[in-house]
Amino acid sequence: MKERFYPYAGAMNPTVYEHLNNCTDPDQRLEVFMWEKAPIEGKQVLDIGAGSGFHAVRYVQKAEHVFAVEPDARMLQQIYARLCDNPLGNISILATSAESIPLLDGSIDVAYARFAYFFGTKDCWRGLHEVKRLLSPGGHFFIIDTNPDQGQLGTIAREVYPHVFHDRYRAEHSAFYQQHGFSHFDLQTVFRAPNRQVLEAYLRMDYPHKYTELLDQIESTELSYNMSVYHFQKRNG
Ligand SMILES: C[S@@+](CC[C@H](N)C(=O)[O-])C[C@H]1O[C@@H](n2cnc3c(N)ncnc32)[C@H](O)[C@@H]1O
Image (cartoon, rainbow, N blue to C red; front, side, top):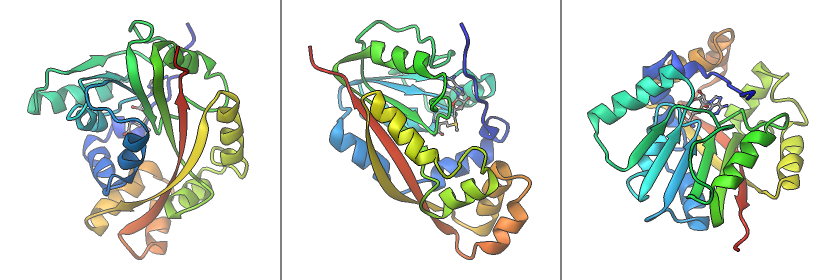
């Protein structure tokens, strides 16, 4: 089966990647928004493209069980290291990709794919189909993406990677997900670094060819970060 494996730089930079997760939406506006629509207390949760497991470990504090799907061995190493530091019984790590998840039909109540660019507008029908298969009736699926039309971090992403975050990116994604039964929400959050060193390390990881230039343009250690949230709810019955 053809897989859409998109490696992320955080796989090779565990320390900086951990900083990135701590700095992104520190007020947890995203979780507040999603948990209002779909509470996870006592639920079966799926985190697709779980990265280092930062969020899976957060979800598991509330959920009954979390399945963390991650295909990159270097990310899996980070998840295992996190669990060695903080052993938890109600989390399962699945070393696989979104296109083929070895779980039963209807076994998941809430699924997340956070900054998971393998859910783009092309060729991702297999992954979408797989999540819809796994959802229980009434189950929820949230896809979280960068909004390159608004906010400082989105603007940087567009400036540095215009071939990815092009002018029609958000409109195309919104139309695509609408076609697949999703609603689209815009959410305003922030990226808050504790100091310039952390900000620099992050910019260097995600924008290696431009980070010094970017750093010169940025005065604060807090940047606005707007996100697009796509929400799907499976029909009951
Ligand atoms: C940008 S990172 C985001 C990770 C995490 N969700 C977070 O917010 O920190 C995207 C993750 O998706 C994983 N990934 C790439 N292709 C994938 C696929 N086809 N199925 C599932 N995960 C995939 C990458 O290895 C990486 O860990």
